[in-house]
Image 1 (cartoon, helix red, strand yellow):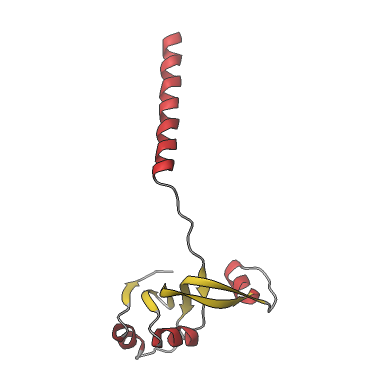
Image 2 (tube, rainbow, N blue to C red; image 1 turned 90 degrees about the horizontal axis):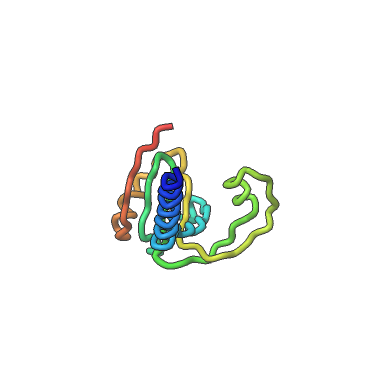
Length: 128
């Protein structure tokens, strides 16, 4: 009876050790914050050639800048993302990732401009 408990205890210690080893070897990386930019600002940055990659999902665009960019994120924008209420005070910080929403009318120049600027394009269909 005593040897059964020893085996169970040894098995549990082995699982804990494997879990700790896995967490040490493969630590979770915090995700970069995303700037919420207007579509106009997105096109401006795209025309300057500072967009590296985009992912198109329905009417949403997310992506990565080639170089970090300083943007002001108003509390209102942050509250829209988090669902809370905010004030119009802004906070400037550096971003490498962004997201925007496409306008309700199609922009026939967007894909040719992305290709012209050498942007890596990925498209996903998200069913609501």
